[in-house]
View 1 (cartoon, one colour):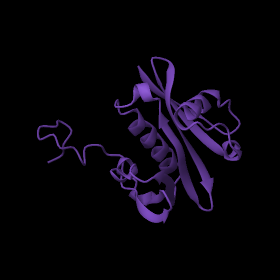
View 2 (view 1 turned 90 degrees about the horizontal axis):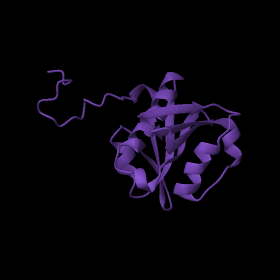
View 3 (view 1 turned 180 degrees about the vertical axis):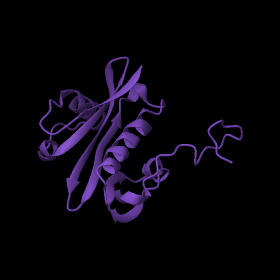
Length: 149
């Protein structure tokens, strides 16, 4: 079974941090006390995580990662959608993130677009009113039962 769990500010972040260490070789940082984290579990085991924080008038996404052995199962997509949904439910004016060059396609398919280049990273953003988590909009299946004609 796949499920997601939110960890608000002040929570025990040990499971989110275990994902962060395994994927990014990074541990706790000063922003963890100001952020909400989401962990995705597969069969009760933490396999993916991401963080949502508020900074300078925008929600920022970061530390979105999936354990290497669990990639290719759309778990990163689930983390990204959970983060965007949480921002949207808090009436986000805009959502931003920094991503390494070459990974931007993962984010742009949900509407984020480039706003700045920072060396080997790109800053992406989306206005809050443009967040659209409708998976059927880009569905290429001709006979999709969820497609609205």
